[in-house]
Figure 1 (cartoon, rainbow, N blue to C red):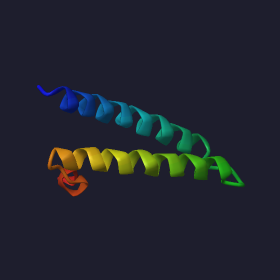
Figure 2: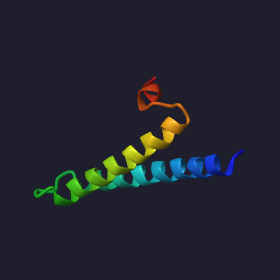
Figure 3: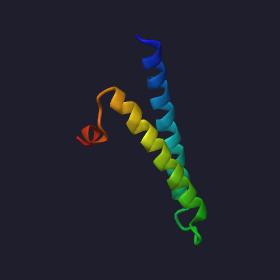
Figure 4: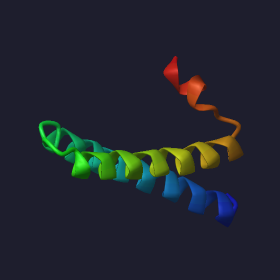
Length: 68
């Protein structure tokens, strides 16, 4: 396999781990009255999802394809 593709596969796994971690933190802060921390985690999650989407496009995979 191509080294560049290997690095992308590793990054996809890393992003999935990061998303899982952020999702856990969002749940912890679900009842936060100010919502500041929750909003920060939601912002980070969106950044991770955007990057993941760009990498998946390199593999000709759309997020909509994963909903099946």
